[in-house]
Image (cartoon, rainbow, N blue to C red; front, side, top):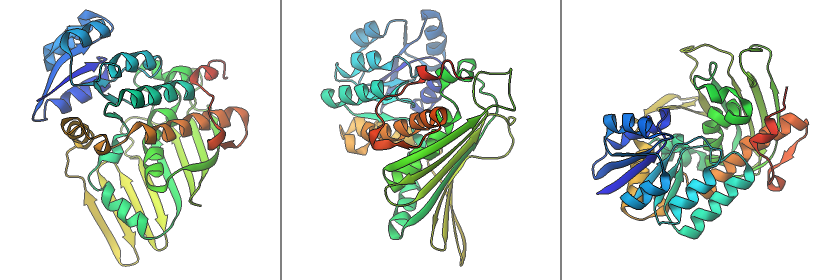
Length: 333
C-alpha cells in the first residue's frame, strides 16, 4: 500500500484525487490547503485528514508520496520540505515561476534521491511508445503543436505574471511531447498579441513560436485564449516525416500515409500518469517516471524562453537561457 497526501485543494488536486481513488494499493491519507476549512471540504469528499500546515502534515502522517498541485510560484520551499524527508513527489506542471527556481527544485530532488515526476501527462498515453518507435524510423522534419482555448476559467491564470500565458499554461503539453520525441531545442523566436480580449484580462490572447531542434527539425507552436468553450477545436501535436503524418490528440494517435489512415485509441482511460507514478513509487524505480525532472526542465525552459523572446523581439538560444521568471511579465502592456 502506498500512502499519498495532496498539497492544494483546487481543480488539479481534485483531478488527482479522483485518479488516486481508482488505484489499487493507494490510499489518500492527508490534504493540505490554504485553510483547514478548504482542506476539510476536500477530505469530506475524497478521504484523509485535513491540514493547513504542510510541515505538520508531513510530520504527523509521513506519507510515501505527495502530489504538489499548488500554483507554481514559491514551490521550492515546499519541495524542500517534502523531498528532504525522503517523500516521493508528483509535481504538477509548470515546475516553478522562473528558470532559476526550477533548477533549484531539480537539484533538491537529485540530492534527496526520491522518485519525482512532473505532470506533463500527455507523455503517459499508452500509444506514445508506438509513436516513439515510428519517430525513430526516419527523420522528423517538422513538429506543429496547437492549443485553442477560451478565457482562463481560474481567475489568477488571467494575470500573465501569475499564469504565464497560454504557452506556459496548456500548450506546454504539446511542447513537452515534441521535446520528448525530438530532443533538445537549439533556438526559438516568439510573438504574442492581445487584440481580441482587451479589458477582459491582463494576458495575451494569441501566441506563436517558431523553433529549431538540434536534430534539424523545425517546430511551430501556436495558441489562443480568444475563443469560446467547447469550440470543438481539440489540441494536437503533429509530427511530419517523409510520407507520414503522426497526429497526437488527447487520447488518440492518428497515422496517415499514402496507404491510408491508422488510428490508435488510448486504453488507459486517462489513468496513465497516475499509474506510471504509482508504479515508480511502488518499485522505487525513478526510471519508470513518465516525465522525470531532468526532462521536464527542458520543456519548462522552452516556455519561459518563449516569453523572453516575445518581450525582447530576439531569438533565444536555449543552451544560454538560464535567467528568466514570470515576475518580468508584471509590467507588460
